[in-house]
Amino acid sequence: MTQPRHAVLAALHDGPVSERTLAAKLGVPQADVQDYLDELRAIGYGIQRDETGYQITSLPAFGACIEAARPAGYQVEFHDQIASTNHRARELVTEGQVDVAVIADEQTGGRGRLDRSWTSPPGGIYLSLGLRPNLTPPQVPLLTLGAAVATATAIREAGASVGIKWPNDILTTPDELKLAGILTESATTAETSVAWTVIGIGINANTDPESLPDGATSLRALIGDVDRCHLTTHLLETFESLYEDPDTICDRWRSLTTTLGRAVRIDTGDSSIEGTATDITDTGALCVETAAGLQEITAGDCDHLRPL
Ligand code: BT5
Image 1 (cartoon, rainbow, N blue to C red):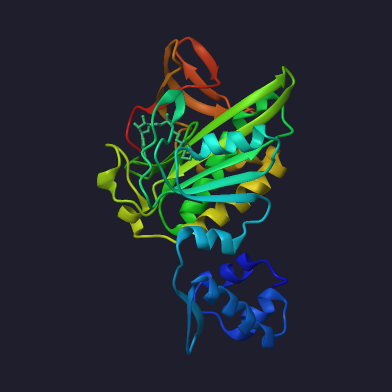
Image 2 (cartoon, rainbow, N blue to C red):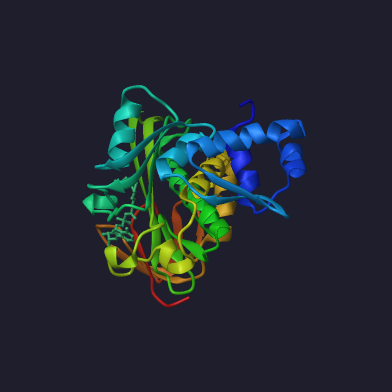
């Protein structure tokens, strides 16, 4: 197949599409379209035709979809079950691989920040990217913001209403239940350069909310089961474009966040700071107007103090 399969899948995903439109979207002769569809059927996609055109009627397992979609830009490694995709991505990137995406259906030792755990039952999206970014260490938090933008954008496209809570939470709006979280880990070779960065993204996709901690929800509970492969591919494409043009991340983040303008309390580990979140700096630090003046906070746990 000369066209990337994900282009065929993207065209089919948007609903019934005629053979002629498919051929035009793919830039191939109409006579070749059946070969593309047959190849997807051989992987396990149910593709049927009615009077309005072709559409996907059933999906193969998540791993087979990911293998079929071959998301551009990353070497993908899929696991039905793994301890932690962040741990595996870190192994790969420290062995010298770059631009790897480790994806799993289930994690047995999923991790959050500060050694917290991330509940990871089957049916979720557990994704870690191993990168060697051309950024200085103080700029690395931008990648967490970029991952949050890509995640929120893909989830919104799937049909759920979400916003970003600084720095790493994807919460439903307006009730602010946690749907996804991001864990960024990095190592520096010297003060001025980053050796590697692993960005881990956990999304409660096709999981029962009863299997999640209090305060969490899933896409299954909000909008029903989603095509995890389509969501993941879209997320990766958005992240890749932000990664290539990091100057665009902050503005995209501002347009998706629910933190700015809110009364917040930030626990930095050493102190608790209360005030109004006014903006982010160009490296992703949160600007908080407090009784003692403006403070820039680079890391911490943020609570929104009043409902949306
Ligand atoms: C995070 O930490 O939100 C980062 C989560 C990153 C998970 C991904 S999955 C792929 C990759 N591989 C890994 O091992 N990790 C990454 P934090 O802000 O510290 O939030 C952790 C807190 O969220 C926990 O203490 C729980 O209160 C809550 N929590 C745990 N599992 C959850 C879930 N599935 N959904 C919503 N909240 C959860």
